[in-house]
Length: 328
Image 1 (cartoon, one colour):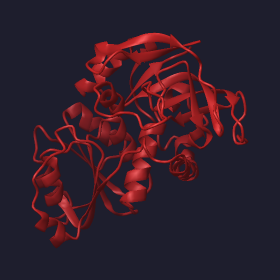
Image 2 (cartoon, one colour; image 1 turned 135 degrees about the vertical axis):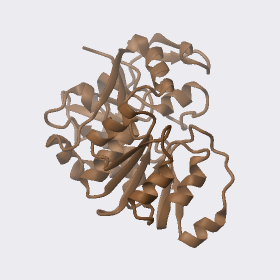
Image 3 (cartoon, one colour; image 1 turned 60 degrees about the vertical axis):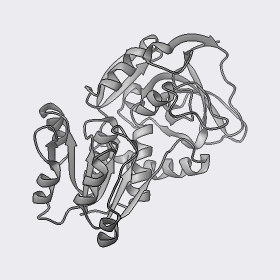
Image 4 (cartoon, one colour; image 1 turned 90 degrees about the horizontal axis):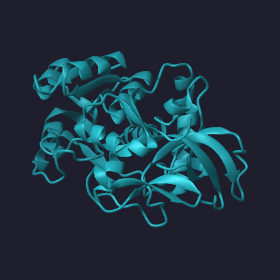
């Protein structure tokens, strides 16, 4: 048996509770991980609210990333062995003492990192790579903007883009968050409560605009992204904190030859996620091991306090990743 976080009904953080259930068996091509730590992400909040249901066949338990130790392997798994330390992008089930994960979605814990730090990697690193580099094809020397730079996604995107040669801009909600963004590599960080980020970044780019924009905000940011985008720019939407329904002037898209795209990671195939894992291991893991890229942990909560972790996530007061400690 194992402990896990159950959702009694959709709603606020108070609907989350500790339950006991059977440890899952690893299926064909899967490994069973004894979870040390699990990452907390905004999709978890959306699932708890009933806004982001798990895809067919996925665990209904919250949690999309973990770090821990392989304790069993299913058939046809040759890449991992019992006692290997891994971090993994799960299809669900991370808020638990054990989780079964497709072997291709696991990565080794980078040398020099603690397990709790490794749990902060998979969800944001897979997401940023898939959207910024695979879909938007950000190139070295291009200009890149990430909104919400102090979030887990933001800190990850800033570091990855900077390390791979781009000029990086970001927006954040206060002086402390802007300072953190600059510390992790942002060339310009704009406090959107005090400055017009479109005006500031147009000046910073000498009127040329930004080549790739990663947006987790939506709402009125969508039209402002069109204004700020450079010719042949790419805009990637990941979530819509300020709403997904907007009215825009399509003429801007035509005149600038813009590409607007977006994606969700969880419903993608095992093969697609394994492909992303291979690219991360080849191009990003060495940068983590050299400490050129490093995770930032905002707060840690024991599993039984998962509700408190969601309250912090929804407050947007954190800088970096929120972690659940499942086992000492």
